[in-house]
Amino acid sequence: MVWPDGFAARLEAFCARHEVTVFTVLLAGYALLLGRLAQQEDVIVAAPVANRTGVDVEPLVGCFINTLPLRLELDEDQTFAELLARARETATAAQAHGRLPIERMPLADADRGPGRSPLLQALLVVQNTPPWRAEHRGHRVEVVEQPSPRTHYLLKLEVLGTGAPLPARLVYAADAFGAAEAATLAAQLATLLDQALRDPDGYVYDFSLLDSPRR
Image (cartoon, one colour):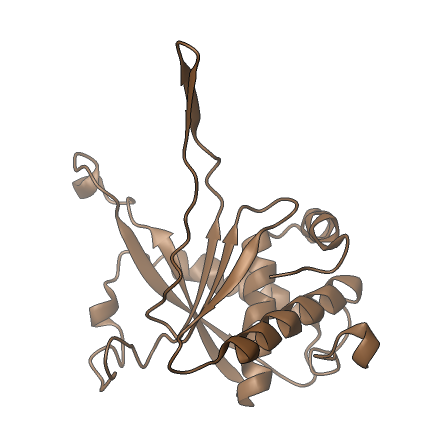
């Protein structure tokens, strides 16, 4: 994804001013874009969470991750600040159910089609783990992120880090979107979020999905 000039710095300042995380802002903007394009006021975005909260898994070795559905309701009379507050409440409340398996959620056993869930079709991933590196006898070892080019979801917004330059990409299901369509969606998301940061008291349905030269 290509963010507008200075976007990452504005996002960082915005989060500090409104006391929210980068994840919450991205969740609100991502859900807003999906809802507007689908003409739906009820949007569910999936998000992976660490699932090591129980004492029963403390002695176990491995990666424990669960996927949570984050449900946001949109309203034409809603400002972005109000949507942001709702996103924060939703994300916080969802953590209380972080250990609930996806198979036990409503609609999880519905007809989902090959490799897809009817409940979760859009994923948001924010990699906020600090980069790991080590040095030994003059040799340096570090972990290099290699995001997967495929996804089991219709769309996956993946952000690598929470600071500038905020590298991100929108991964799409090739049987649902073409490269040009996905590029348009990514540009619309960047444009939408940039306007929201500049005018958080603006109504969410008033923000344009076109960049400045095309408005």
